Image 1 (cartoon, chains in turn cyan, yellow):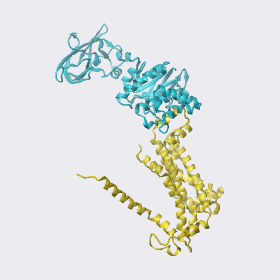
Image 2 (cartoon, chains in turn blue, brown):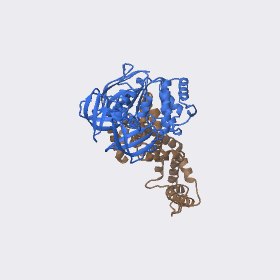
Image 3 (cartoon, rainbow over the protein chains, first blue to last red):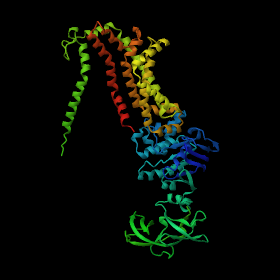
Image 4 (cartoon, rainbow over the protein chains, first blue to last red):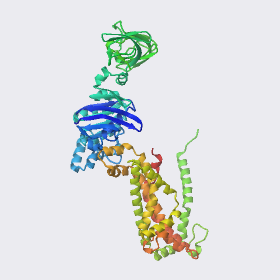
Length: 355
Length: 276
């Protein structure tokens, strides 16, 4: 277990700045997820941490030691690549033990560690196979095995599940969570899939255009997004947004008017609101619908599509030209496309963003 | 609707292939055939002349220390192949994987040497080798052959290394490999089909090289096989039977080599064609 600190680390390619100077600390034993859309710089940041990409400026510290110019093995990091990067000419056993062989460890020790990793990852029966004879999930486990045999201080995982199909991804997610518990290691996990980040991480770093938008525990990001980008990125389906005018601000409650004239009272904002034009955000699962709704904060619209997922139903509603997605934990068998419905935005679930 | 008859198709394809093969083989068969004729039959305009005689083969084997020539050819060819494979793979690795600064300029410069014809190099090379005292030595052929073979081999190997997944080289770095270890443990095994191809190609071109060998080697102890046929073809003298007998003997090792390694050779060619 080790602590990682990035101090004013930046990356530019020529005159193009990919990552403006940023600071980040990952504590001992923490599972930190870097999430963001494609091209946001999260993989570049991971490669800077790994030592595969030099930082343009700033320092990388592992356990307080400056490793900015050090080669990957000197940093004590191990990395699992998105494409697994298994050596195609080596069998599973040789792949897992390759790092130890290069470190000139004794053959007995290598065998012991390879066997231990294989047992942990349920690869015992596959040690003699070549990578081309393995399924995607098995390859991924070999890649993880190769990382754990070297007893690294920090594990770096670059979108390790993105090449797997949906069913396998779910299973591997659970395996990574289990592995993480058994290793008790510091892990940095890059993904564009917020579900992976939410389910696995202790702390999530949301990145956009090379900048860190927000750092926090998964549920903090979900309940208290710092800005519209984070609010839209975390949560599935993503948060609904509406342009609104700020009509009043009293006692922490904000009175908003939507484009169709509907008035909504909201009481969640990450920062003090000064602007007149704001964005109202509400998560699909927080919208109230059906009998017993309070009379305030109601909106009406026409159902366009009904998606019944079994446990939940998603209603896609046209709200005077603005799209609204609502999630209800029931069948809603009597609701059909084309019907007009009324639902309610609970005050405590309404987020207001100035950006 | 078109009807397919797989069996008929197969027969047609094989007949066409056989015809092409027969056409292609005529020079080889003719070479062997003339080698098996008596002097009076040598210029008969038939593919085969009867009776067959092995006199020509006996003559060339008796007249020449063929084992010495064969060993000379083998030493020069294998040394050249080893040098070309080693230098070209290292250079390709430096260009394609390490991206060393200036390597691209060096690569472009190296490529220009591919455009220079051998004939224009022979005189300067001969003078250079005489200055080095390398006339009538193995080194006098091995080093020029290697230098001339490296550019083409670099083109092939560089393309293969560039096609290899970059993550594998990065994974090797994370696993603790230095540049040399990455080259040895990862890059070389990855481009093995290309190495085999380059090796065989260099073997064939070096084994068959005649021009430079003729100029550099004058003493029998160092002569290679390809110079021997010259003895049987001159302005006022010709012994076509012996000439074609020795040509057949020279070609045999290459044909045997190709039979042994043809799978790897074709795989190397195809791997380059379908990658990336």
